[in-house]
Length: 302
Image 1 (spheres, rainbow, N blue to C red):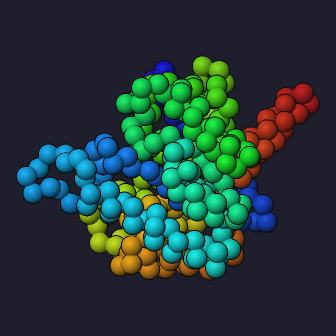
Image 2 (image 1 turned 45 degrees about the horizontal axis):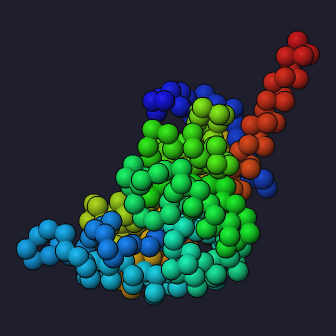
Image 3 (image 1 turned 90 degrees about the vertical axis):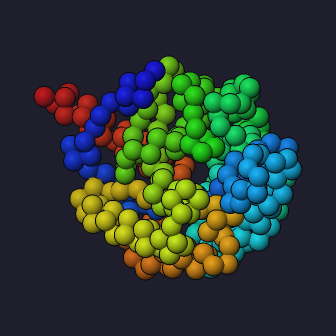
């Protein structure tokens, strides 16, 4: 199924209005990406190329660059989110749950949502068996948390042509790879639909820092500007905003303050809800059902 066959075009201005509880305008969700990088394979991303080029094995400087985030950076974010009383979503590789068990335990103890993020940090088009990878990830999350994950984020937002189909068949209810809207929308699959919850490539430290090579304060400035525009857009119909970080990028000492300042800015607005992905999904599905009921009632009365 082609992408435009899975999700027909829809102008956001032509949709029924969405309302959030308690008169809120905006639902903000925070996604923490925790990954395991296999030192026997090429690193998914690099900060320091080797002097003679190529892909060295082992690649100590780049493996260690990432490892710092899980050893140190993550815990800076945890303290901040605890202070602001915000529950985040942990997008975690299935293998990372065992490799970094204290991180998974801290998230579980705080009631964070766990989202499937591949079994290892690898392009989903290159895993040997995509369904097996998804099943292994599901088992790793459910075995640790006691609950099946409901949402999925592909490593690097990668998918095969069949990923949404397989996810629905394996019990997933929402997906984050389709970054094309400020409201949840539905994607068609061969056995029903799956909800696309708005994620972000813009307020995402991989895009800003690792790819575009911006200075650290770009994260704060972009997040605040994005928030202010979405807040204005949501005057008549609710919007969703995602903030994404990887502990090895925004969790380092010289960058962390800019994530903190962005989040503190958003927290000053009273009509903003900090939700998890599954809360956004459930709100949208309920609202969609309510609208469908209203339409049937009007048709019957007519």
